[in-house]
Length: 171
Image 1 (tube, rainbow, N blue to C red):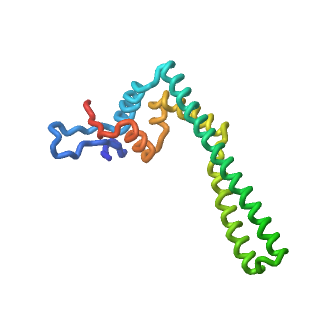
Image 2 (spheres, helix red, strand yellow; image 1 turned 180 degrees about the horizontal axis):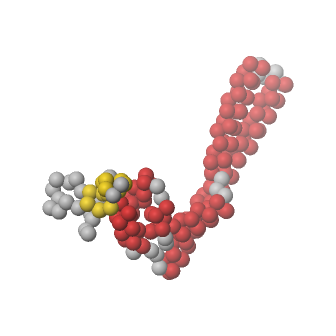
Image 3 (tube, rainbow, N blue to C red; image 1 turned 90 degrees about the horizontal axis):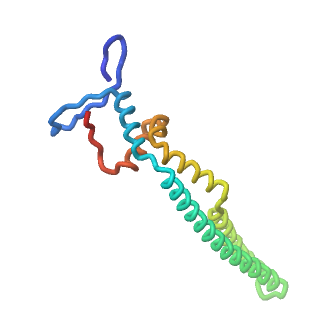
């Protein structure tokens, strides 16, 4: 921050000892210029359509994989149900003690909980997926505006995702 005219003014400055030109820029100016720079990365209409198609195809693929995993897991649950019925039958036939049966049934119940959790983890809500795609497409085509509304930690994440190498400032 710089002080003057009765206030504090945020600045960015280069502290790299190898800089040949020490640069000092107001935060507002740098944010405005960076926002304009990000606008250069705006997708054309055809790129936006292609992005949307690719995201939808990927989502559909994930939905299909999730459905297959859910079917497999439901089959395992059905097998566990059959196993539980067999245990109950063997208790009635006197082939298992109640203690042994209780232990086996507890193991099966624990497996059921794990499988049910797997099912809930694999459920993909198509409406949620479409909302995420809409959000991604909107902000990937309005990166400069996104920059303007983000807080500092999120700005850093966005900057690193777009520019993995450090940026330099040329005034």
